[in-house]
Image (cartoon, rainbow, N blue to C red):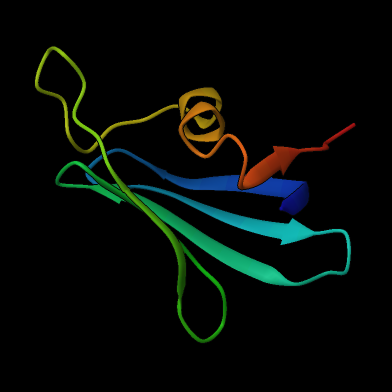
Length: 79
């Protein structure tokens, strides 16, 4: 489990993107586009999930929805 202590949404749609840091300061790049959510560290994709909203949206996602879809893999520990 990655414990996210800092996250910034750098793009809000088409794609939705975030820069995140864990407790140890490691960097993660999170991206949602074309119905595909991925989490990458410096070297590789460490989490991947396909998801399209019921209304057909496939490139716009809130931070809260992103954490919900990554439940069990990413833990929101922002204070």
